[in-house]
Image (cartoon, rainbow, N blue to C red; front, side, top):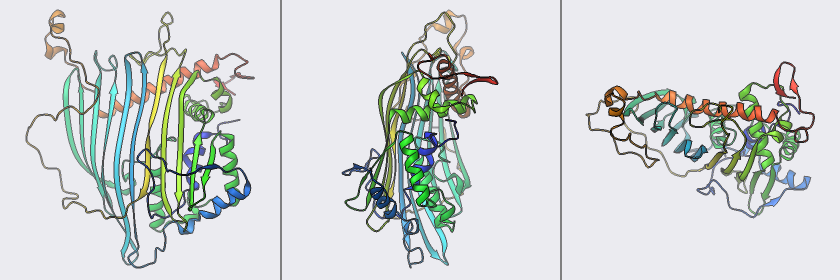
Amino acid sequence: MRKGAALAAAAALACSLVCLSACGLIGGPVNNDGSISGNYRPVTTDIEFLQVVDSIQGDKVLGDVNADEWRFGLEYATDRLLSLRSGETNWKQKESSFYRLVLDKEEEDALQMRGSGSGSSSLFLPAGVYADGPVQLFEDSMVCNDAQSVYRDDTVRRQGDGGAEEERSRTESSLEELVFGAAEDALFGLPVQLMADIVAVANGGDAEDSFIFGMGWEESFLWREQLESCGIALEADLSDGVKLRLSASEETMRLVLANTIAESVGAEDADIALLAQALPIRFVQCSYDIYVAVDGDGLFSGMGVRADIEAVIEGVSYDLATGLPYEEEEDAGEIRLTIRGMERLSAYGGDVVLPDDLGEPLEPEEEEGLPEQPDEEAVPEEPAGDAAEDGADAETDAVALPTAEQFREAFAEAFDTLWQEMYAAALEAPAETVPDAALSPDGPGIE
């Protein structure tokens, strides 16, 4: 099985799962944890599956767009955590956001849009990456949009051994940057993709060209085969409209991780199924569900994603404190990977009022000192007297804080290095664990 085959679970989750969420927007049943309550039962027969597909028609997604005073709204939220921990060393990323978007056609069929919301994120990098102590990055954004542009007010705070710095900025960009940029994550980002496609179709795009709305009967059955091949269970509640729950298994998560690792190391010819079996990872908790709800009239009610994944990576030569492989004589400790959070998209029946100062330049603020530290892990201060013992004053020893981009690059590089070490460990797996495993003649790669 090659990476391009239908068993590439990441593609099945990031694209195909959204196909059955073709819908319009009436009421949102999505819970705060990303779930949708229902009496779910396995979809086991072709008749049940056809009933599900027939209940979800793309031509009903927006309701009657030609009706006078046509309008609908969307409410989006996400809250998620990604971390790597080994002993006291921890790389951590946290993100949360909330956004409301209203669409209508008030004048000559021109699509009007207005939205507003906020978001925050933090990156925690351990000691040894940029300084002797840990460093943190905090970002807060206020975002709004009209039919032409997206307007952002951003505050970036960096903190570590070198002190603390804060920057503020105001930017205007195209609607492609709506909410918080493009969603590329296979585990999260599905509601954002759905919202982007709904906006495109509402703006006159061809629904048949959309991967959300363009699924016919043949594609539907192929999609079901892909889900089964990836270990994804399809369940439905057909008592009132249609509610779907797609539950990933440990097999699914292994395939997603194997696909991610193969892409990271450039192993284009890797056999994803064999690589997934050989990965040195043990799941302690593995829960990942996608929910979609459509009412009895075929109109969208909500979509949610809920994840709770804890895994232990064993026998990998990787030091989280430095981001480098261990020396040969050092023992490789356990690394705990955590992916937890939710994402939801539901209807919003109210309106959005935009501020009066859209597009105006940011006014300079008086020096008022930095705000209080957000509710995060505290950055320990350098013990008094250390600088004097080294024969240098504090000003000389101060470490320049990395830029926000350097924070993000370091976090990405930490995972890239870990993927390389996991790939190398998989290649060394016993033959009974990985049948017919071999090295590619063109370089490392499970075929």
